[in-house]
Figure 1: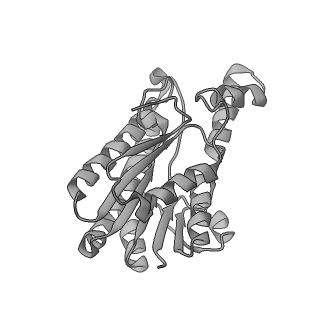
Figure 2: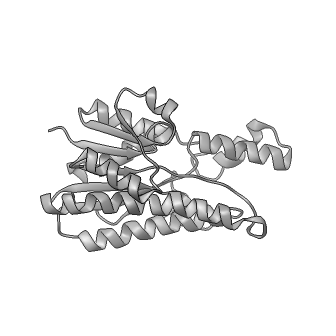
Length: 242
C-alpha cells in the first residue's frame, strides 16, 4: 500500500537518496526544501518550505494532508572553536536542526495519532550522542534533536506512531564537502588528507554514502521496525556503542 512520505531537505544528499528510495518502493514522496532550482530537478512532488518558519510549515502540511512517514532531514553544520562561535551561528543551528524538526513533527502528529499509525525519523548525527571538538553549536543542536525525538516517542508510546532518529558519521554530502574545505583552509592540508581525517572518525575508515543512511531510514519506517520506538540508531561501523 502506497504511503505519503515527506522528506525535508529532500533535494540533496541524504534527503535526495531517501526520497529516491521511498519512490522506488512505490510511495508518494513530497520533498521539501528552500532551493527551488534543486527541487525543480527532482522527479517527485516538491514544495518550497522553510522549516524554521512556523506559518510556512503550517501551510505546507495543510496542503499535503495526511502524512504516513516524516523524515526530518533538513540541517546545517558549521564548525568553530567555542570562543569564536557566534550567537548567530548558535541560533542558526537550533533554528534548522531543532526548531525545524519540532515544527514538522508537531504538524503531523495529530493526524498520525488519530489514525493510530505513522513513523517519524529525524536525521541527527553521531554528534547527537557524543561531544566533538569545535562543533559546540552543531553538537548541542543534534543532542537537542535526539532529545526531542525521545520526548515525542515517550509521549506517543502505544499509539501506533513511532519516533526514531538515525545518527550517521560523516556522509558524502555537500555539508561534508564544506567541512573538508574548512579543514583545507585552516590547516593547509590537501583535500584528500582532509577528507581522510574525517573518514578516520569512525572504524569504517571511509565516508558513508547517502544511500546507506537512506536504507536505515526506510527500515525504520517499515513494518519490520514496528517495535522500534524512541531509539537513536548510530551508523558509524561500531565506534559508538550502546
